[in-house]
Length: 437
Ligand SMILES: [Zn+2]
Image (cartoon, rainbow, N blue to C red; front, top):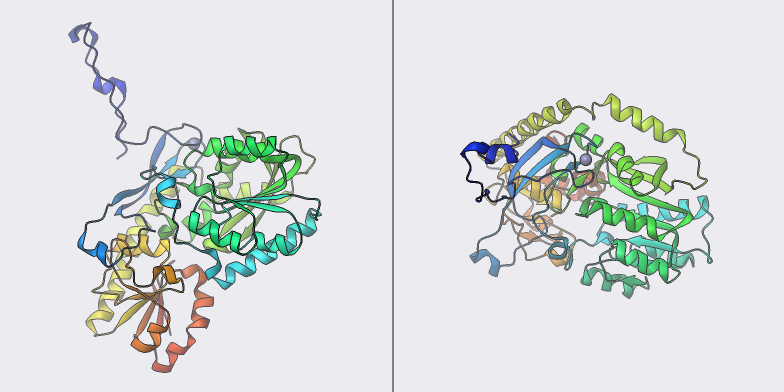
């Protein structure tokens, strides 16, 4: 139940109140309104308490407690932006970030294909300028560097930005803000192409950020945004893609409303496979010549047909999430009762949401493995399952491997085909828990 402590419920009637002694104004315990439009928020899905999904624990941390925060997503009844309250500032989350994009082959191929497509479509060459916001370890911009297209990455995480510079990608170690964008534009560094891939979800002040995108984009420039699509999250039962580091979950409608406030508009959209189903939006200034393509209207109609503009779809999702938890636990517990050994694959943010929400710990999963050496010897937040190098699977020969980054399951099952040598099987938890022999 979403309780707003409005002034009316706190204040006693005028005649009973001493005139000189007004009641103090108290901050509401719930988020006061939508972070994009200020509209009223309604319940969407409540995943209980969870630690920050990137707060991997060291051996020494195991003797300490951990901080857990509510993972309770609301939906705005006006612009239909799904959102979490910001419990921890991005400065705390992203200044030393464990996520290096370069550890997935599929991501690297995706980045190469994107670069080839936009360079051709928008005629980018050595006279153009490209800015990527939240450029991670340079896995995308390196493709522009290779094509001699001048570019600049902006990446707040020190360790990740350092890795980008080491491979020749010019990178500013900063958070992107309207202020920073105005500074860049003032130095003549407005861009022909501005890229924001999987960053908007992590921005607490959406309006400042989008004002910055508008400020740094040339009048006929193109802004491309990639973000997980709320419609796919709901359809695909992808509740585990919800975590504290992602404050917002977007429909096209929520994006349209946000961009319009800053003089921007969407002129084309592609649906892509990343993160279980994402949108790649091509945007420009309102007055720019880019005509709006039919893909945009088609997607608006699909969102309407999917019920995204009524509260019922959101309530139904919450019930489906509870059911999924019960199915997954039944499956894992019955395997444990038969004496089977289960290991995990991957230590992604989505895995931590799933494991914490379902209460799956070391008594069910012996360990998990990950390709990222940063995580080796550490433990998953909250559940404290040990993270080992991938070679550990061949030594331990578990009967089942639970694939946590299910969005990359085909790539992972191909890499791990050797588990069939000992008749090992895979478990994919989402959209519904399933054993894959
Ligand atoms: Zn809103």
